[in-house]
Image (cartoon, rainbow, N blue to C red; front, top):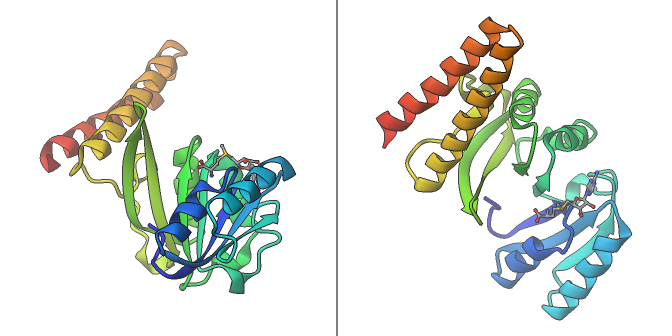
Amino acid sequence: MVRPNMALADIGTDHAYLPIWLAKQGLVSRAIAADIRPGPLQSAQQNIRRYRVEELVSTRLSNGLEEIFSVEADDIVIAGMGGEMMIQIIENALWLRQKEKRLILQPMTSIPELREYLAKRGFAVLREQAVVEDGHAYSVMQLQYAPEKIIMDSLYPYIGKLDAATEDNREYMRKVITQLEKKAGGLSISGKLEEAAALKNTAEKIRIKMEKER
Ligand SMILES: C[S@@+](CC[C@H](N)C(=O)[O-])C[C@H]1O[C@@H](n2cnc3c(N)ncnc32)[C@H](O)[C@@H]1O
């Protein structure tokens, strides 16, 4: 999802494996591996030296994008963090609202809230793809500030732009269906029948979409 030969900022980089790998593959012109904690940055620095990419990858202590300038990054990755934290980081970096930039997000939690926030702020999903790793399904999305490209339907908060074309995408959809049905069950028990019915309906729509697109 990172465009070739662009400047990358990896926010919450931890070990810096992603910028190191991209640098090794010759896929980035330069990269900043940023983290809010000094500990991960130390291991990032060690890894950068170990894989001999010091010329291309530097580290930066930064809360979100606070210490990153717009000219330093074309593509901004935020992966492996909660959706609420991503919202905070994106809300505080107004320079992301430029057509040339791309945001690449792989959220762990609060994903419908994140998708709704992004749409409200004018970030359109250009591509989305799920990946299954160790039995867990994750979704990765590439976004551009492009309010005119936003298309929101009732399934969008739950599956974004995923289609059912790959087994990994279908696995992610099955996970979402399970979560929706579980939540609907809880709502039914507490007497919130209308809300429960709406979630069950959404789960059913995802199931139909999967059958159609298989
Ligand atoms: C679970 S790791 C994810 C590592 C890597 N991005 C990945 O996907 O494998 C989350 C990292 O985000 C960092 N982090 C949390 N909040 C942050 C913030 N506001 N700004 C920058 N980094 C943050 C943490 O210190 C931690 O190293």
